Amino acid sequence: MINVKHFALTHISFLFYMTASAQGVKDEKIAVKFLKEDFNILRGKLESTQLGLYLYTPKDSLDKIFDKMSNSLNEPMTPLEFYRMIAPINKTLRNLHTLFWASLGDEKGTETGLSRFPLDIHWADGRMYVLRNNSTQENIPAGSVIKSINGESSNSIFENILESTIRDGFNETYPTARASRLFSLYYAELIGTPKTFTLELAALDGAERKLEISGLTATEINASRVTKYNRRYSQYGEDWDAWIAQKEPALRFEMKGDVAIMTLRTFHTYTIEGNGQNYEVFINQAFNQLAANKTKNLIIDLRNNHGGHDLVGMSLMSHLHDSVFYYYKKRTALVKPTGKSVKKGNIYEIIGRNGKVTPAQPIYTGNVYVLMNGYSVSATAEFIGHLKNSKRATFIGEEAGGNPVIFTGGQTLRVDLPNTHITGFIPLFLNEMNVKLKNTGHGVIPDYEVKSSITDMLQEKDKEMEFALKLIQERHGN
Image (cartoon, rainbow, N blue to C red; front, side):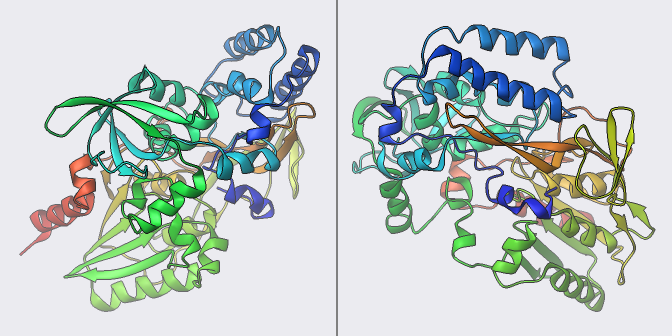
């Protein structure tokens, strides 16, 4: 769920930037007293403004973690070293929308000038696979297993990155997908930007070898993804949302035989409109077509949909639910929010923003199948939660990355640390969804877990879609 008044966040959510320019990496070290000043500002802002701060980590435990971090600030550090020290807060807080990154000037270096790991990878079953070889060496076949980089095991490297990756509760599918897709960026941020990388590889036939490859800039890597691969496999890589820049439709509706497939790549209304569509018009037309065709089976594809605005989910639910209901049970904040609210003790309860959903014609009563994965988060996870709550769909894929019951989001507070220039947003609302589901700290679990292997990806097989179509045929085929 994204507050439309804070659209700047919609471009940042799930693109967690904390980068440093070549100059930034060589920055003079900052004195301990100024590092502690920045840390205390960050801690103070979190403790005084985020109502969901202790949702998954009790206050006494979080206090100990914060104290340990503060006590470790006993020698001067560069901004990048300071960031690497505080980055594990992401896993500790487990609040998906809490984001921090460096100054825009520092960000430019990692995005353009610094040496980056040149291979796109896919992480699965405890292994790091080569997805795309963007390096200048041609003898690194896709599907090879990377066993180590510069003497450190790939398992150790990936675990290091996971320890600093944002997530929602105890979910692991989102941070795993994120660390996998943004591996080159995370490696630069959290480990380093060496000129060369020594790899231990296991080929498809099991043969092992060691080789050295040169790093590339982000600009060179992006160019390879286009010229060498024509953005092939982009749905699994760092350029997974390239369709936005290419002005491709965000929303698609098609018939595959007697099965309808509705694909929603985002719930960001500005992105939808920017790519030439109106979500209300699209949804109304789609459900009218379902009614006209008397379509009995609908697949809603929400894979890689990182959320956006809850209005899209509400509009969909208005055609999938036959009675009036409210999307949110309660929305509260520690800081007085914009708009109407009432103060109850030390808590502000937001008024008039609970999302009334009124049935809209035509109501679709057919069978619904939802495809989802770790990147199905935020507003998308809200919608998935309501479908689960109303027992309205069969879920296929992997655990949704976002929490369907309770999470922080909405109105945000910007944080600018004066000495290290780390910047961020802290979500102020604690959103409780109007569902009867129990908060386990996980996203909705699929009824049928289906994951694409590296072989499926390289052969461009859509295993989840194939499974859904086969399941529909088995259940409802003539």
